[in-house]
Image (cartoon, rainbow, N blue to C red):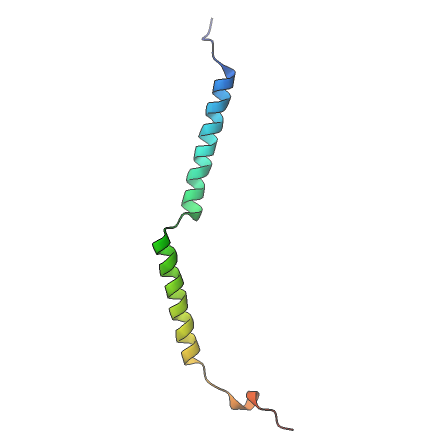
Length: 66
């Protein structure tokens, strides 16, 4: 005869394994450190400032001739 196993324990272990693999996948997809987030925000701000500083004013579109 085969070994006797407790199905409840097997189900719980399978659920733990699935939760662990899901957590690993989420860590890879969404896990970023605070420093990485801050660096991205600083880069975005720097790019926006650079673009705003390079804009040309077009006086013909700002005033209306009536």
